[in-house]
Image 1 (cartoon, one colour):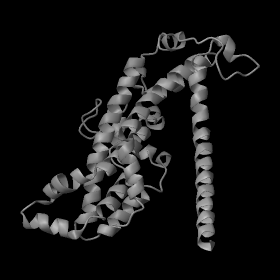
Image 2 (cartoon, rainbow, N blue to C red):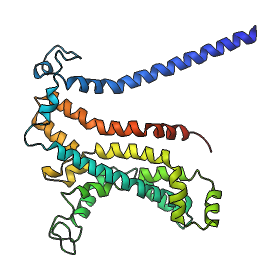
Image 3 (tube, rainbow, N blue to C red):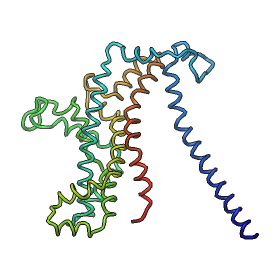
Image 4 (cartoon, rainbow, N blue to C red):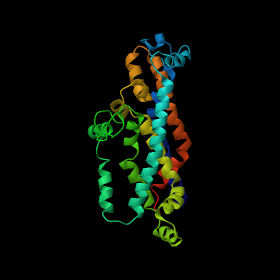
Length: 300
Protein backbone atom coordinates (compact mmCIF):
# COMPACT_ATOMS: atom_id res chain seq x y z
CA UNK A 1 0.00 0.00 0.00
CA UNK A 2 2.80 2.36 0.91
CA UNK A 3 4.59 1.75 -2.39
CA UNK A 4 1.36 2.26 -4.32
CA UNK A 5 0.70 5.60 -2.61
CA UNK A 6 4.26 6.70 -3.31
CA UNK A 7 3.84 5.84 -6.98
CA UNK A 8 0.57 7.80 -7.12
CA UNK A 9 2.25 10.78 -5.44
CA UNK A 10 5.18 10.61 -7.83
CA UNK A 11 2.80 10.39 -10.82
CA UNK A 12 0.81 13.35 -9.51
CA UNK A 13 3.99 15.42 -9.15
CA UNK A 14 5.06 14.58 -12.69
CA UNK A 15 1.64 15.63 -13.99
CA UNK A 16 1.82 18.93 -12.06
CA UNK A 17 5.33 19.63 -13.38
CA UNK A 18 4.25 18.80 -16.92
CA UNK A 19 1.20 21.08 -16.61
CA UNK A 20 3.37 23.90 -15.23
CA UNK A 21 5.85 23.54 -18.09
CA UNK A 22 3.01 23.48 -20.61
CA UNK A 23 1.49 26.62 -19.09
CA UNK A 24 4.80 28.49 -19.29
CA UNK A 25 5.26 27.43 -22.93
CA UNK A 26 1.74 28.57 -23.81
CA UNK A 27 2.34 31.97 -22.18
CA UNK A 28 5.63 32.40 -24.08
CA UNK A 29 3.95 31.36 -27.34
CA UNK A 30 1.20 33.93 -26.79
CA UNK A 31 3.75 36.65 -26.07
CA UNK A 32 5.27 35.93 -29.50
CA UNK A 33 2.01 35.32 -31.37
CA UNK A 34 -0.05 38.31 -30.18
CA UNK A 35 1.94 40.94 -32.16
CA UNK A 36 1.90 38.72 -35.25
CA UNK A 37 -1.86 38.22 -34.98
CA UNK A 38 -2.27 41.99 -34.50
CA UNK A 39 -0.30 42.68 -37.70
CA UNK A 40 -2.31 40.06 -39.60
CA UNK A 41 -5.72 41.38 -38.54
CA UNK A 42 -4.75 45.04 -38.93
CA UNK A 43 -3.65 44.43 -42.51
CA UNK A 44 -7.31 43.78 -43.41
CA UNK A 45 -8.80 46.83 -41.67
CA UNK A 46 -9.99 49.97 -43.43
CA UNK A 47 -8.52 53.42 -42.83
CA UNK A 48 -11.49 54.35 -40.65
CA UNK A 49 -11.10 51.28 -38.45
CA UNK A 50 -7.41 52.02 -37.86
CA UNK A 51 -8.32 55.42 -36.38
CA UNK A 52 -11.22 54.29 -34.17
CA UNK A 53 -10.80 55.19 -30.51
CA UNK A 54 -12.47 51.95 -29.47
CA UNK A 55 -9.98 49.18 -30.17
CA UNK A 56 -11.20 46.06 -31.94
CA UNK A 57 -9.13 43.00 -32.73
CA UNK A 58 -11.26 41.77 -35.63
CA UNK A 59 -11.85 44.06 -38.63
CA UNK A 60 -15.46 45.06 -39.14
CA UNK A 61 -15.04 44.53 -42.89
CA UNK A 62 -12.26 42.41 -44.36
CA UNK A 63 -10.49 44.72 -46.80
CA UNK A 64 -8.24 42.61 -49.04
CA UNK A 65 -7.47 45.62 -51.24
CA UNK A 66 -4.89 46.82 -48.72
CA UNK A 67 -2.32 44.43 -50.16
CA UNK A 68 -2.98 45.56 -53.74
CA UNK A 69 -3.00 49.25 -52.82
CA UNK A 70 0.15 49.05 -50.69
CA UNK A 71 2.18 47.36 -53.40
CA UNK A 72 0.83 49.78 -56.04
CA UNK A 73 2.03 53.03 -54.43
CA UNK A 74 3.98 55.02 -57.06
CA UNK A 75 7.72 55.31 -56.51
CA UNK A 76 8.18 51.89 -54.89
CA UNK A 77 9.49 48.94 -56.89
CA UNK A 78 8.66 46.14 -54.50
CA UNK A 79 9.52 43.38 -56.96
CA UNK A 80 13.03 44.82 -57.23
CA UNK A 81 13.33 45.20 -53.46
CA UNK A 82 12.30 41.59 -52.87
CA UNK A 83 14.64 40.49 -55.65
CA UNK A 84 17.53 42.39 -54.05
CA UNK A 85 16.87 40.85 -50.64
CA UNK A 86 16.52 37.37 -52.14
CA UNK A 87 19.79 37.72 -54.06
CA UNK A 88 21.67 39.07 -51.04
CA UNK A 89 20.25 36.40 -48.73
CA UNK A 90 20.96 33.43 -51.03
CA UNK A 91 24.57 34.46 -51.78
CA UNK A 92 25.27 35.40 -48.14
CA UNK A 93 23.81 32.19 -46.70
CA UNK A 94 25.55 29.93 -49.25
CA UNK A 95 28.89 31.68 -48.77
CA UNK A 96 28.51 31.72 -45.00
CA UNK A 97 27.81 27.98 -44.88
CA UNK A 98 30.84 27.23 -47.09
CA UNK A 99 33.33 29.50 -45.33
CA UNK A 100 32.13 28.88 -41.78
CA UNK A 101 32.08 25.10 -42.18
CA UNK A 102 35.56 25.01 -43.73
CA UNK A 103 36.98 27.30 -41.06
CA UNK A 104 35.27 25.30 -38.31
CA UNK A 105 36.61 22.04 -39.74
CA UNK A 106 40.15 23.43 -39.91
CA UNK A 107 40.06 24.73 -36.34
CA UNK A 108 38.55 21.48 -35.03
CA UNK A 109 40.33 18.70 -36.97
CA UNK A 110 43.62 20.06 -38.34
CA UNK A 111 46.74 20.31 -36.20
CA UNK A 112 48.78 23.47 -36.70
CA UNK A 113 50.55 26.09 -34.61
CA UNK A 114 48.54 28.81 -32.89
CA UNK A 115 45.27 27.03 -33.68
CA UNK A 116 43.69 27.88 -30.33
CA UNK A 117 45.01 31.44 -30.46
CA UNK A 118 43.43 31.95 -33.90
CA UNK A 119 40.15 30.56 -32.58
CA UNK A 120 40.22 33.02 -29.67
CA UNK A 121 40.79 35.86 -32.14
CA UNK A 122 37.73 34.68 -34.07
CA UNK A 123 35.72 34.59 -30.84
CA UNK A 124 36.43 38.27 -30.22
CA UNK A 125 34.26 38.93 -33.26
CA UNK A 126 31.25 37.77 -31.23
CA UNK A 127 32.00 40.44 -28.62
CA UNK A 128 32.32 43.37 -31.03
CA UNK A 129 29.08 45.05 -32.20
CA UNK A 130 28.84 45.56 -35.96
CA UNK A 131 28.26 49.29 -35.47
CA UNK A 132 31.81 49.68 -34.15
CA UNK A 133 33.44 48.26 -37.30
CA UNK A 134 31.15 49.72 -39.96
CA UNK A 135 33.53 52.63 -40.67
CA UNK A 136 36.56 50.46 -41.63
CA UNK A 137 34.24 48.19 -43.63
CA UNK A 138 32.84 51.24 -45.42
CA UNK A 139 36.34 52.47 -46.25
CA UNK A 140 37.40 49.00 -47.49
CA UNK A 141 34.39 48.80 -49.80
CA UNK A 142 35.06 52.32 -51.02
CA UNK A 143 38.73 51.52 -51.72
CA UNK A 144 38.37 48.37 -53.84
CA UNK A 145 40.78 48.85 -56.80
CA UNK A 146 39.48 49.04 -60.39
CA UNK A 147 35.81 48.99 -59.37
CA UNK A 148 33.35 51.87 -59.20
CA UNK A 149 35.68 54.13 -61.26
CA UNK A 150 38.56 53.53 -58.84
CA UNK A 151 42.14 53.42 -60.12
CA UNK A 152 44.52 50.57 -59.35
CA UNK A 153 45.23 52.19 -55.96
CA UNK A 154 41.54 52.25 -55.03
CA UNK A 155 41.13 56.00 -55.36
CA UNK A 156 38.92 58.31 -57.37
CA UNK A 157 35.65 56.37 -57.27
CA UNK A 158 33.21 54.56 -55.01
CA UNK A 159 34.49 50.98 -55.23
CA UNK A 160 31.76 48.50 -54.31
CA UNK A 161 29.61 51.07 -52.51
CA UNK A 162 26.01 51.31 -53.68
CA UNK A 163 26.07 47.71 -54.88
CA UNK A 164 24.57 44.54 -53.48
CA UNK A 165 28.05 43.06 -53.05
CA UNK A 166 28.83 45.75 -50.48
CA UNK A 167 26.05 44.17 -48.39
CA UNK A 168 26.98 40.56 -49.21
CA UNK A 169 30.74 40.53 -48.55
CA UNK A 170 30.58 41.51 -44.83
CA UNK A 171 27.96 38.75 -44.34
CA UNK A 172 29.95 35.91 -45.92
CA UNK A 173 31.59 34.78 -42.71
CA UNK A 174 31.03 35.29 -39.01
CA UNK A 175 32.45 34.37 -35.64
CA UNK A 176 29.23 32.75 -34.47
CA UNK A 177 29.08 30.41 -37.48
CA UNK A 178 32.74 29.41 -37.09
CA UNK A 179 32.19 28.75 -33.39
CA UNK A 180 29.16 26.53 -34.09
CA UNK A 181 30.96 24.54 -36.78
CA UNK A 182 34.08 24.06 -34.69
CA UNK A 183 32.14 22.80 -31.69
CA UNK A 184 30.12 20.46 -33.90
CA UNK A 185 33.15 18.96 -35.64
CA UNK A 186 35.00 18.48 -32.35
CA UNK A 187 32.43 15.82 -31.41
CA UNK A 188 33.59 13.43 -34.16
CA UNK A 189 36.06 10.68 -33.15
CA UNK A 190 39.68 10.95 -34.28
CA UNK A 191 39.52 7.40 -35.65
CA UNK A 192 37.26 8.70 -38.45
CA UNK A 193 40.03 10.99 -39.69
CA UNK A 194 42.70 8.32 -39.34
CA UNK A 195 40.69 5.78 -41.34
CA UNK A 196 40.06 8.30 -44.12
CA UNK A 197 43.74 9.24 -44.34
CA UNK A 198 44.74 5.58 -44.50
CA UNK A 199 42.38 5.23 -47.47
CA UNK A 200 44.24 8.07 -49.20
CA UNK A 201 41.74 10.91 -48.69
CA UNK A 202 43.01 14.47 -48.76
CA UNK A 203 41.90 16.92 -46.08
CA UNK A 204 39.43 18.59 -48.42
CA UNK A 205 38.00 15.22 -49.40
CA UNK A 206 37.60 14.25 -45.73
CA UNK A 207 35.75 17.52 -45.17
CA UNK A 208 33.54 17.34 -48.28
CA UNK A 209 32.84 13.58 -48.44
CA UNK A 210 32.71 12.60 -44.76
CA UNK A 211 32.03 15.57 -42.50
CA UNK A 212 29.79 17.71 -44.70
CA UNK A 213 27.22 14.94 -45.43
CA UNK A 214 26.89 14.37 -41.66
CA UNK A 215 26.33 18.07 -40.95
CA UNK A 216 22.65 18.30 -41.92
CA UNK A 217 21.48 19.56 -38.54
CA UNK A 218 24.36 22.01 -38.29
CA UNK A 219 23.82 23.41 -41.79
CA UNK A 220 20.06 23.69 -41.24
CA UNK A 221 20.63 25.65 -38.04
CA UNK A 222 23.13 27.94 -39.77
CA UNK A 223 20.73 28.42 -42.67
CA UNK A 224 17.86 29.47 -40.41
CA UNK A 225 19.97 31.81 -38.25
CA UNK A 226 21.78 33.39 -41.20
CA UNK A 227 18.67 33.76 -43.35
CA UNK A 228 16.79 35.58 -40.60
CA UNK A 229 19.82 37.78 -39.89
CA UNK A 230 20.46 38.77 -43.51
CA UNK A 231 16.84 39.11 -44.61
CA UNK A 232 15.96 41.32 -41.63
CA UNK A 233 19.17 43.37 -41.79
CA UNK A 234 18.55 47.10 -41.99
CA UNK A 235 21.92 48.49 -40.91
CA UNK A 236 24.23 47.39 -43.76
CA UNK A 237 21.84 48.31 -46.61
CA UNK A 238 21.34 51.73 -45.03
CA UNK A 239 25.10 52.42 -44.87
CA UNK A 240 26.32 50.70 -48.04
CA UNK A 241 23.63 51.77 -50.55
CA UNK A 242 22.37 55.18 -51.63
CA UNK A 243 20.00 54.74 -54.59
CA UNK A 244 16.48 53.31 -54.48
CA UNK A 245 17.20 50.52 -56.98
CA UNK A 246 19.63 48.92 -54.48
CA UNK A 247 17.22 48.90 -51.54
CA UNK A 248 16.36 45.71 -49.72
CA UNK A 249 12.88 45.05 -48.36
CA UNK A 250 13.69 46.18 -44.82
CA UNK A 251 15.16 49.48 -45.99
CA UNK A 252 12.27 50.01 -48.41
CA UNK A 253 9.79 49.19 -45.64
CA UNK A 254 11.29 51.86 -43.41
CA UNK A 255 11.15 54.43 -46.23
CA UNK A 256 7.55 53.42 -46.99
CA UNK A 257 6.63 53.71 -43.32
CA UNK A 258 8.07 57.23 -43.10
CA UNK A 259 6.09 58.37 -46.14
CA UNK A 260 2.77 56.67 -45.25
CA UNK A 261 2.32 57.09 -41.50
CA UNK A 262 -1.41 57.63 -42.03
CA UNK A 263 -1.78 54.25 -43.77
CA UNK A 264 -0.95 51.80 -41.01
CA UNK A 265 -3.10 49.10 -42.60
CA UNK A 266 -0.92 49.27 -45.73
CA UNK A 267 2.23 49.18 -43.59
CA UNK A 268 0.91 46.11 -41.78
CA UNK A 269 0.14 44.41 -45.08
CA UNK A 270 3.67 44.87 -46.44
CA UNK A 271 5.20 43.96 -43.07
CA UNK A 272 3.31 40.67 -43.08
CA UNK A 273 4.52 39.84 -46.59
CA UNK A 274 8.15 40.52 -45.63
CA UNK A 275 7.83 37.96 -42.82
CA UNK A 276 6.73 35.11 -45.09
CA UNK A 277 10.13 34.15 -46.63
CA UNK A 278 11.82 33.67 -43.26
CA UNK A 279 8.79 31.79 -41.97
CA UNK A 280 8.95 29.49 -45.01
CA UNK A 281 12.67 28.78 -44.46
CA UNK A 282 12.06 27.97 -40.81
CA UNK A 283 9.17 25.63 -41.61
CA UNK A 284 11.28 23.76 -44.19
CA UNK A 285 14.33 23.37 -41.96
CA UNK A 286 12.60 23.21 -38.59
CA UNK A 287 12.92 19.41 -38.26
CA UNK A 288 16.71 19.57 -38.53
CA UNK A 289 16.83 22.67 -36.32
CA UNK A 290 14.94 20.88 -33.54
CA UNK A 291 17.25 17.86 -33.91
CA UNK A 292 20.24 20.14 -33.53
CA UNK A 293 18.85 21.72 -30.36
CA UNK A 294 17.93 18.31 -28.93
CA UNK A 295 21.33 16.77 -29.70
CA UNK A 296 23.30 19.75 -28.37
CA UNK A 297 22.70 18.59 -24.82
CA UNK A 298 23.64 14.95 -25.48
CA UNK A 299 27.08 13.65 -24.73
CA UNK A 300 28.64 11.51 -27.43
